[in-house]
Length: 256
Image 1 (tube, rainbow, N blue to C red):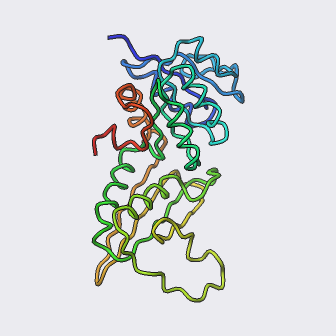
Image 2: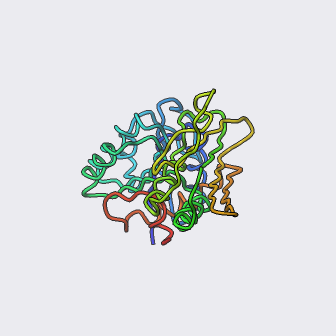
Image 3: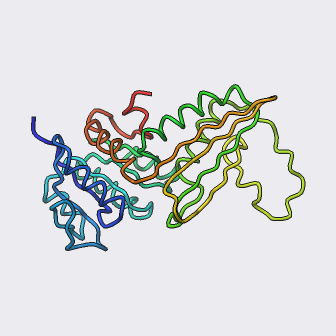
């Protein structure tokens, strides 16, 4: 069986570089193109980085991994769909209109968008979703490196959305006085509070704290290195051809 031909957009970034190495190291995948206007001419896993998307078509990429930013991906993803390429996307910051547009665009090829490719993070979100109906209160604390530009994280938002969908019976917040606005975090789906920490020395971490009468449950996930995302990215590249249209989250890939 021939290796699946994979391209990477955002290859100049730290995450993109790690993805290139992971793709190149897997015998069932072949890194055939790397794109990043800010890193054109550099090498990633033996492949020269190009500055334009057309390099993906020139290399006959079948699957393209995108780890960039939302405003760039809004151009990249429709282009991939138009050229019949599957997309595996780790970019966050999309809204409902974006998802509608991507759903329409990917009619002839497939697109998977995941807020987190760490398998432990996917399981953390699933565990929080399962626990939600059994607790009255919940808050989410997400902690990331100080280079992350969006807050709260896509993972925190996805977690809150899933918990709110699993249970609508959350106790109201009792806070009546807040001398420092924002001290109680932001109000997320279902009224679940979201707190963001940006700290040097961290990579990506999240705690979900749930409380009921006389008890609490804490679910925590830690990614200490970007390598934690690579097994999920590699697996998605291998299975994206069998996930029709637009898929949100890695759950379908893992079967959880």
